[in-house]
Image (cartoon, rainbow, N blue to C red; front, side, top):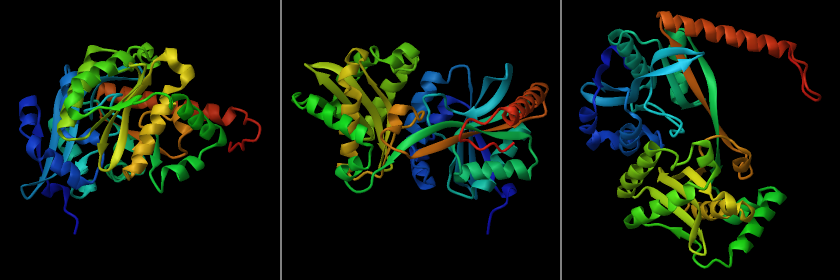
Length: 379
């Protein structure tokens, strides 16, 4: 029998010291919840907050049923801009480095999430919006939030966000490669032959070599196109500190996986990943632009994905966006969504009205836009 929301008690952790006191039981709850992503682990959230938490108000909501913790929502209160309007919003403890988020819940998600949102709405005034991003479309949490919005008649919207490719690890490497396009199979084969002359060209660093590995990684990171775009590990002091502290923390849990490709002892490519719940999450991959013609990223990616097959993992998750390079390796993707809930405040109302106007305008344009050849118009 489902528990009623009013039978759930809520506690809130609003400072870093209190958050640190939760470390002992946090990861056990994450594992019990079945969320299966490293972005909810205590190590990730702790490292993330130390790098990006300044200026935000921690809002970790803990749900209990009969004294037992049945849910944690790693949230914060922050300032965001929507449609040019500065909103005081509740969001996950996340930014563009966080590729997927969720609630940590072992009980009834509908009941627990409802109780959490009710508590925030009742006890935290001046909140203009709730922006819950990086949820997987069609997941239990997505369905729960959608149902709560409808059931409580809240003003909100659901919008698509990033689409992330992933590879299901079934069978063996040879069968997987045979399923790829002829052009990409040839690319993998050619790069393999090109790099075959490099004895010990790929170094997989151990936990005791983090400082050396991270130095090589930063050297490569500063030569990548991601660095030019401001999205590399070496782009800012905050980003560097985040990924260095995360490497230390995850290596202690035997979850860090870090490969460096070298040519004549010069680091030219890297993959920084976390192995969690029998899946490999590729957080960052990069290569020196000057070696682009050699395709070091292809060679290193093939090496790591082959290792996933050899180690019988369940999945290789590319994370991030579904760019052309990643889609050459797999047709499978996860759609992520953002739920937006607007409160009855001056700025919340303005953002809600503006969003509806923008959506209506896009729908009107879509109706009048001529359909391209071969596309069926549903006007």
